[in-house]
Length: 197
Image 1: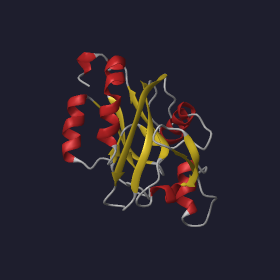
Image 2: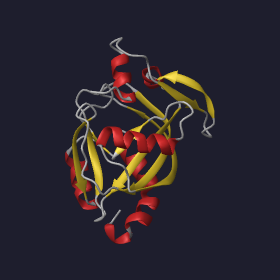
Image 3: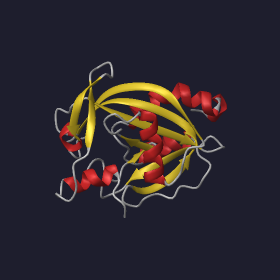
């Protein structure tokens, strides 16, 4: 299994790989430094750059992923297509495309910026904190996902109504509704009002 940024960060806690660095930002999204990935998520958290991707099939269904059980942060919960952190100096768009391919084995057929959102979400289960300046992206996916089992436990394509039911029944990431709500205008533009997003 090749080492990806996420698995390298997981391995860093075991002393088996160099730590992954994140880009620290101020409230306007301007870079102000770097920090090691895990340390940036320890309470109270340090504001850092992140991204969230929402990919849809041609029927307007959203591709969700269930985070792998082995992940140190929010294992086993459902979330949007892909989330992550750019390397310091890496463009968020490039990072979003890269991680989508690494985690899910698909390249977006279309990927467009959908704004940014800033949030502070503590995760009670892990004790970690998401203090993020998050760049949002929406797009289309045409290939069948081939997820990396160390990153992704499961995937599902869901309609807006199916998402409502799943969200009521299953655990989702602490940040999921925040990023979904922030991305909704771009999602509606992509999928059309009739898709219900």
